Image 1 (tube, rainbow, N blue to C red):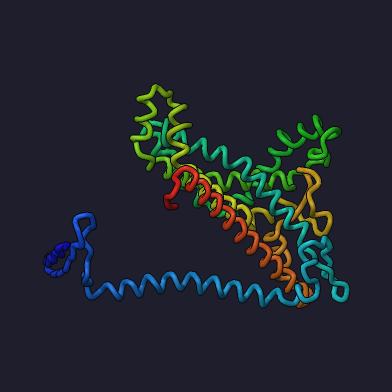
Image 2 (cartoon, helix red, strand yellow):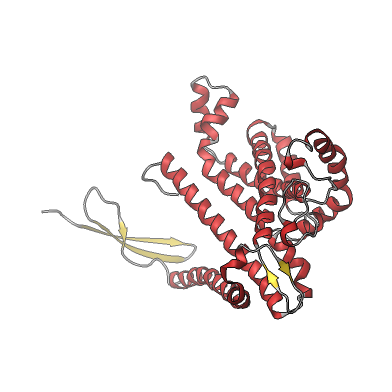
Length: 348
């Protein structure tokens, strides 16, 4: 026969009395509270539930608004709207397709990620593992300041300053060297193209990704580093085998945050990617003009010529929302797989 023990503990904190009855089932189980600690707990619980419900409510309202606004275009075009390449807003001859702008969005964001993620990771490793405390503090403030710069500022800087540097020192040399042999560099560069847009997007997301990764690396336990050093590892080997694997799921999450920022960016891309529509908006070269889903919406929303045109633009917003959700779901699955692989049976 097992004996059950009951305990009554009274704690007074700043004049407030908490009475907790604790029951010990056996010697192998921990103490379990049986009564509420405070009369404010239900209120606090209600506030938390309300905050969570607010998120779901906002998502439901967005889905309803986008779905209602894009209903007409999907009724007229069906799912061909996702594969068509035409974009003709002339009343009576309307024809709309989202495929060129989906491709433009993915290409510009892909360029940004290919450039931005390695640089961001390098910055974060330098700040968390190599830089002195004084230098780390100064550079961290600068990076956080750059992360707060509005995208329109990056856009105007790229339009009036940066694109000329890209044309003179990057695009023209690449075109002269490889333009006749590689289709990626075939078109004559003007600086307003998908390549320049991707580079400026990378410049914009680097401070965001690097600041997040830096925080992640700074909370890696020192025991990880000490264990590697005790085995004779160099600094680079310690970073490679002890620090980065510990934070790899967080690094992926930071990269997805940067990708989401790049995909949804509007004004910067609108200023620098060009104004191509229809089939011409599909980039066949890095120096091709294009448009993204968000830039086309920004260019034409206030000048929608008909209800169908307006519905098509809202349909582009629906496609952008769906694309963002798919990317986040895939990222979540990748993080889950990485965590399960490194910690079987553990939690994310």
